[in-house]
Image (cartoon, rainbow, N blue to C red):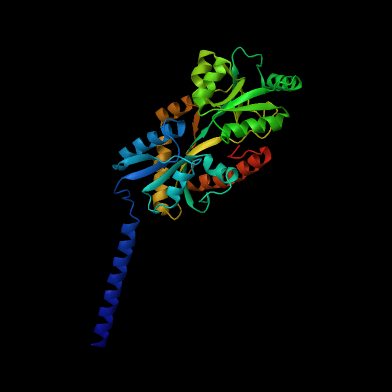
Length: 332
């Protein structure tokens, strides 16, 4: 009788264990997602990050059979939307689509209410953005060497050349200050509220030069109204292979390109992270997507969780060092 009771107890224990394993498996089932997914954009719509995010969201909706909705929470140099995701449940249903500001903000602002490494799980890098320094096509400066020589002559005459960016403490502002430092020249910064406004004034002659993304510049490059002198980054663009990098033109510290990517709250199950990363990477590798992105001056990368995580750690240090060297702050 005691032996029968013992066997019955063991059988019940095995049944309980199987039930527990099944419950855990159900919680981490690859059937995710079973409800709509939100992707938070910490910036205004209509820019390149928004266009890329909406494209990815639309294609993920088809793959997953669930709505993937892009929501906008702009403000405070992307801090508001970023904090919202950092505090969201770590279940994969609230994601962050962000860009270089994630690693710039800790160096630009006195304090941010989240930590880019502690509070987020990297999922996938979408693209590397490509930025060029432009002048008008009738400008006397046809190369960076000529531009630097012109800037030195202008400084000696008491009328420094200027450059436009899409705003104070923006990536383009940082690039401009790095150019000044790296080339040993003086340039006056003219901030605008957006890329479109700065390139319009460049073509109108209100500014001498302007940092712009290739996507914004491309129509005007094709029409022959502007000329690209140099590219930010460590390698030449596949879209504008004839344009040298700043490094090739002899200007250091302008090899840190911008990027867009997706992250989740820290603690999101790895199975969910891997699924999102794999599906997104497949989308970014589609020939029609590659062609569309490159036409906007955006180079698809599709870096997965581990590679993207290493990239973010390195990029955080790169931008921190560069921002400290050039002395840019969000309040100036």
